[in-house]
Image 1 (spheres, one colour):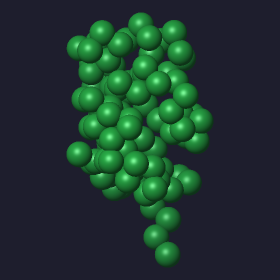
Image 2 (cartoon, one colour):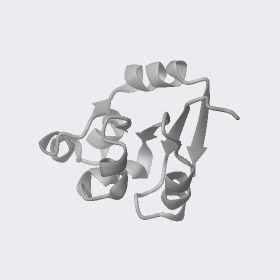
Image 3 (cartoon, rainbow, N blue to C red):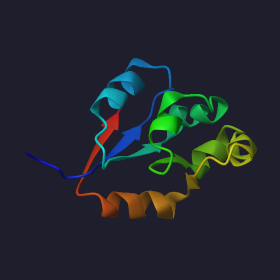
Image 4 (cartoon, helix red, strand yellow):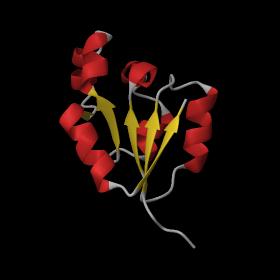
Length: 100
């Protein structure tokens, strides 16, 4: 049985089929990084993933800024990481999967 933690990188909006598939695949030790369209999750603080993985889900701050969502994410206390944080997450996890 493989218990290696995985970094899930979601590129699509929270209500997309990619997001639904990712939610079904997330393990107990896994983390999630939301990039590109996925940062729109900042507009949905009731999205189930926020409740299920509150300390293991992150937004890419550059994509938040590009979409004008940085303030909303901060107001909702949603954790954001910059590109250095993105790199650190990929180094922390032996495996990653990107959901398109």
